[in-house]
Length: 92
Image (spheres, rainbow, N blue to C red):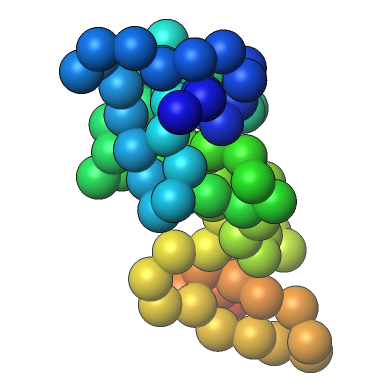
């Protein structure tokens, strides 16, 4: 069995798996920030591994006002998405 990232053989029990992909522990890292990942906190997109923060930053829709990823409740006004809290601030 080979590591899905580096292609080198996987030996012993020191490996991480997600889906049908297997990795050396040191290869199980975020494509964005490079930090080592936990199996239960990992996203896969285009065969790359992402931490929660980088996945949201790269692939989530962003608030038109603050440009941060939209999480939880949000509103769309004039075709532009806003955090609910940002929209309340804009109205003031």
